[in-house]
Image (cartoon, rainbow, N blue to C red):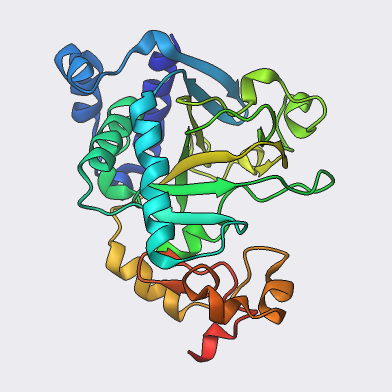
Length: 293
C-alpha cells in the first residue's frame, strides 16, 4: 500500500507539473508500476516500504542497503579522507564519483523505488557526523541545494549507513505530527538505522512548496552517524553547470563554527573541506573569503 501511495504521489505531481517534469510521463509511470521484472532486477521489495507521514510526505524503506554497500560507502570516504589528509574531527561530506559502479547501482535502485529519474538528481553525497552539542539543532543538509542547481528541489532521499544509539534523527518542525518536532519526543522509527532509506517530498501535489517538509536534525549524542543523501529536482541537471554556478554564487557558511575554524587556520590546512573542490561545495566559503578566489 505504501508503495502504491508513493507511485500515486509522483504520478499526481508529474501531472501537475506537465511539461516541466517531462522526464516522468504517465506511460512511464504506468509501465514501472506493472513491471515486476524491473522490480526484481533492482531488488525492490514493496513490503519493506512504510508511509510515515502525509504532511510532509515521507516514506521509509527498511533495509534498502545491504551491509556490504554500507561498508563500501564508508570505506570510500575513508580512502578519500586519507588522500586529502583532512582533520578527522570535522564534519565530512563527499560527492561520490559518477563512474563508481556500486554508487550507480544504488542510484538506479533509488530511482526504481521512488520513480524519480536519475537525470534530475545530483550524485550520492556521503556525510559523517561525530558527537555534537546536545542543545543545538542542525541543518540536515545543505539548504542551498536548490539554489546551486537553479531548479526547485522536488525530493530528498536519505540512506543511513550506521546505527546511532542516541540522536541524529530527522525533524520536521512544521509537521502535523508534533512528535517530529522535538528531539526528546521523537519516535524510534525516525532513529538512524543502518541500511534504512527515507524519501520526503518538498512539493505539494499541485507543485507548490510544502512548508511542512522544512527539516532539521537532532544532534548526534552517542557514536558516529554516517549517511548518504540524494537530491531530486524538477528538471534534468548538468553536474558541471552546478559546480560552475556554485563557484560564482554568493559565498556562504554552512556551519556556525566556520568563523572559529577559519580563525585557527583551517582554511589553509583543510582547503577542500573549508573552501571546496570540483566535487565538493566548501563548508566555510564566506569565512575563508572564497568570493575573491
